[in-house]
Length: 170
Image (cartoon, rainbow, N blue to C red; front, side, top):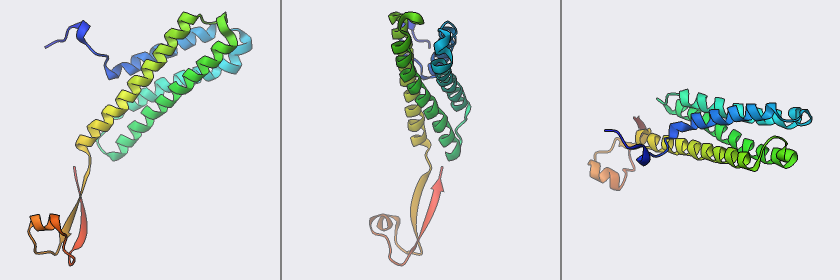
């Protein structure tokens, strides 16, 4: 069953498209920036945009099947998030220095909105991963060994004679 276009929400996977749009916009705008700013400010801006997109792609390509892969995916998504935050800060600096040389107020609003959307989408991906992992998390259960009590008694008051054993369940 399909959903009408007017009723659709923004998908969390759109973060890749938004980040790619940000990187393309950055490349176009930094090419028309005056040379006096090109090597001081634009290099950092391009680096942040490229890092955000590449980290997001790397994080998206990690398939979560155990705890280490979960941590790796979280690490890449957080690196992309931090890169976009640094990118937004750098945009403010460039606008303060260059003013109307490379971007208008409308363009500044547009790219700021894109950066905000990217942050929101990356945060959504992080939260969705966390929620998904909560359902599949490794459960640590403490079991009493050597005790001759029933399960109900075991849960209420552990035996002092028994030893502790940790079992991991998937």
